[in-house]
Length: 348
Image 1 (cartoon, rainbow, N blue to C red):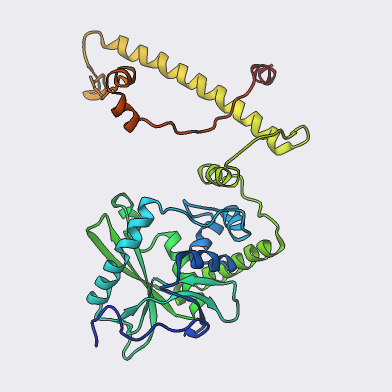
Image 2 (tube, helix red, strand yellow):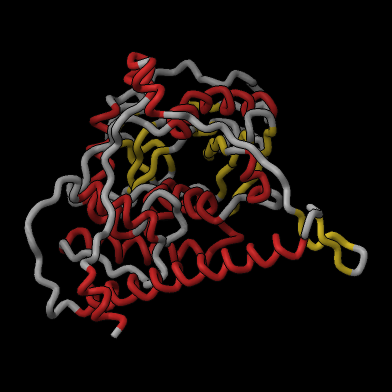
């Protein structure tokens, strides 16, 4: 069996069936802007993790706004995404070497019966190591930080499982291989088998169909109350980067409830900080001249001396204006400001 990581045949033409149930939309060497545009015509495997609410980088609402053109096409990569793509080929070649197989880049693929169901395979496997002959499948390549190693202890984390099962459903494969490089020096590999996840695949397809219908009908999805607020705040910043004007919330129950919750949380936070400071004073006072307190022969708490770097920005600006200008930048941000009268009325 060949061990070369890349096959030498020419890339297939767009429109050609390249998997049992997958038709090529764009080849792997297509312009990135063209790929970003084409993927808006359907739901990809990474979109599904967001639709299901298990992605740190999006949710069903962000997918909706992306597909309907409310969000800009991707700009500059984040550092993890940039390096992930840079290392992807190396990990794919290593997977092929270890498994004595052949892999090839493909591109954006759509299901022949459900064109909205799409995926971009990292690599198509031309000689599957699990079968005799030239049975074909695919391998998904991941590069993850070392602190996420625990998520891969017994298999793929939920977001990768959903992604690979979506790819299998798009392409008609009965399994997908996964190769992951963790922390730059910890390589692991797994196999996700369709037969082990039939109900999950059915749920994925149903969730995808609902999400795509909402997108087609221009009906924004309603998110659960426990949706990740960091993802939402990032989405709102992308949607409305520039703001001006006034909106009335007199009859908006959700906005009024959020305002009340925010004020209650601010009060709880302030009171918690006061309690913490009072408790700190009690702890330090109980030490006297000591720096360690014990209870039943075990350390209860210590009062340690620490240090941290401090930059005198005023002195830096006066004595080293060029260095100050080179190192200090003004980054705009927004914060909620609530008039004192509103806060007092809420507390009354």
